[in-house]
Structures are given as structure tokens and as C-alpha cells.
Image (cartoon, rainbow, N blue to C red):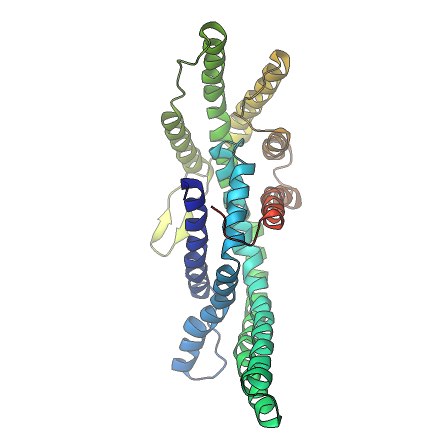
Length: 346
């Protein structure tokens, strides 16, 4: 098995592991559900039964679609190979944030109930019609088993959704007043760090093209690891400057809250770098360079920088471009999934 195929399978396994961890952690951050009025039963329901019910449908889906998911990962990797890793991290980070905060908590209870109904129907058919040969006793047993399989997911959904909908209001308020700045600041710092790193990649790309034209082969090697380290250090520095102090259970992280430096200086510099590189590539008719990605990538990068410079106070616009980055990544995932085979490939 090639390393690429092995990596796709490892990714699917990691998804199956990370999913339950996410749901168990999610239950730590929402108010405890208390359907029974008994502290011990409520504790078990909230911290064990609910995350288990949420996790099982995803684990089951991942298992039954494991080959197709692995092929999806492989197709996505082949599709976005031309996009540098740093930009893949950018889109992936935005997608993960939207998925974990907005989509999974609302969609999972409903999915759990639907999959419970599907499994219940399958069990009813197998027990009531197939295994026991039909008849009223077998059908009755099938109905009892099927109802039993639906009760817990339905009960969890009934208890969870009102709690999360109430929490949803607080999430939106916190999003508007605080966490939007955190999420957007994270993306903004990443965009700036990658924008500053792009010219370095471009210089080495130009040197390689010069080698190829003069000597017929490339002697100049791009120090990718060093450039990535530089971008990472820049990202951490930018993050420390941009973000406000963040309270945590272990104390306050003392970020500097100097975002004004970005829309006064740093974002202008990043926008200038992106603009100059686009003009240079267009003027010199450069082909095969992936330092700032394709048209869609340039569009999203430009949006982040322009919105930060001119529309920083527009909550809807800022939220929209974070969702745009998610939609681009999600659309690629959906298209790759539809193209993927459900058979095991090597």
C-alpha cells in the first residue's frame, strides 16, 4: 500500500477517534441536563449516555463508509495538492471551527435519531420477519426491540436540544461580543503570516526557474521547513499581538489586544504583498507557481484583508467570510465524496 493510501486510512481512523472525544468534551461545556432529578442518574445521562448516543452514529457511519471516506480523503488530497500546505491549514482551521461550534451540536441529535430509526427498522425486519420466520410473536418482539433502540436517541434529543438552544443564544451573544474577534483574529493572523511567507517561496521559485532555463536542471532547493518555521513564529507573534486577553479555567492568557496595529500597518503590508505578487505573476506570465494559490484562494485572502481594513465593525460580513472559507472546504469535501468509490482501492 502506498504512503498516500495509508495516510487516507489513518485519517479515517483518526476521525473515528476524534469524534467521540469531541462529543464527550462538548458535554463538559454545556449546562448539565437533569431529566431524572437524581444526581447520579443525571450525571450518567449527561456525561455518558448522551455523548455515547452522539458518537455511535458517527462511528457506525465511518465504519460502514470507511472505504469511501478513505477514497474521499485521497481524492481531496490529490485535488488540493497544488494548494500549498499553509493555505490548506488556513481553510481547514476555519472549516473545523464552524463544524465544531455551529453544525455538529445541532445536527448530531437529529442524525442519531434518524440512524436509530434505520437500525430499528433493520432489527425489526431481521427479528420479526427474517430470523424468527414471521408471525405475530416474532413481529411483536421485533417491534419491542425496535422501539427500545429508538427510545434513548429520542430521549437524548428531547433533553439536549432545548438545553443547547438556550445555550445557542448565549453562544451567539458571546460570538458577537468576544469569540468572533478570537476566531477572526486567528484567521487574520494566519492570513498575514502566510502572506509574509509567500514572497520567500516566490523568490526560490524564481531562482529554480532561472536554474532550469540556464542549466537545464534545478540546483536551488526551497528551504520549506525553515520558511514554515518562520511563518509559524510570525503567526504566534501576530496572535499574541492581535488577540485580547482570554480567560481559561487555568487563568487568563495575557494577549496584548493590539489589533489596531493590524488595520493600521500589518494588513496594509499584507495586502500590498498580495497585490504586488499578483501583478508580478501577471506581468511576467508566471506559470506553475503556487505561492498564493489560485483565483479562489486569492479572492478569499483579499476578502479577509479588505474586510479587516474597511469593514471591521460589520458583524455579518465578518461572519460571512469565515463561513465562506468553510463552504469552500465543505464543497470540496462533498464533491470528493460523490466522486469516491465505495470499494477498497490500493
